[in-house]
Structure formats: structure tokens, C-alpha cells
Image (cartoon, rainbow, N blue to C red; front, top):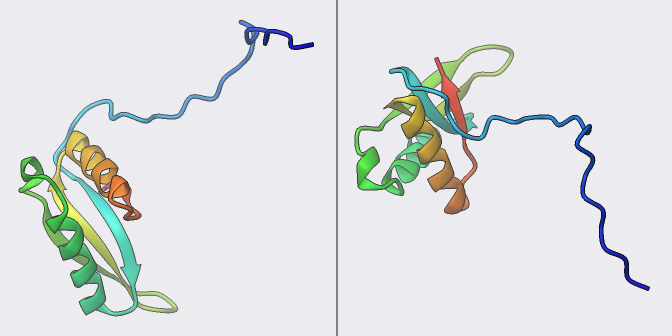
Length: 104
């Protein structure tokens, strides 16, 4: 016997995740990796920038050196507002690239 699924309870609590930006500001970007070699970081960020649509042409490559127990280099596309950063990361993810939106 096949029974119809019952609708979820109206009393169920839900965890909301922000999938879309809520506003815009000037200091957003997309991090596409972290590398031990600055040349690898620059190459990867440049490759990511080349995959973005023309509407995101103002993104620029930024390599941020982080010193600690080991030095590494963050590969980022910067000079984006919040909406552009989210659009860029979604576009890169569709292309199979890992990324995360960052605000600084």
C-alpha cells in the first residue's frame, strides 16, 4: 500500500541560511584559494577572474600574504560590492571552482 506523504508540521522550527545578500557595500570579494606559493595564488586568481562575466569586469586579483607558523597566500578577487561577490562566487561554483565570499 502506498500512502500519501503528510505535509510538514506548521510548528516545525527551521534553520534559515542566508543564500542571498541583504545589501551592498564597497569592501567585498571572493576567495578562490590559499597557497604556499604566491605565484600559484596569482595564477589561480587570474584564472578565476578570466571565468567571470563581463558585468564583473571591475574585479581585480589580490594576493594577501598571511604569516603565522607557516606563510600562505590568499587568492582573492576584490573590488566588488556584496551583490557582485555573491554572483561571482555562484558563477565560479557553476564552473567547478571552490570559492567563498569575504567581507573585509
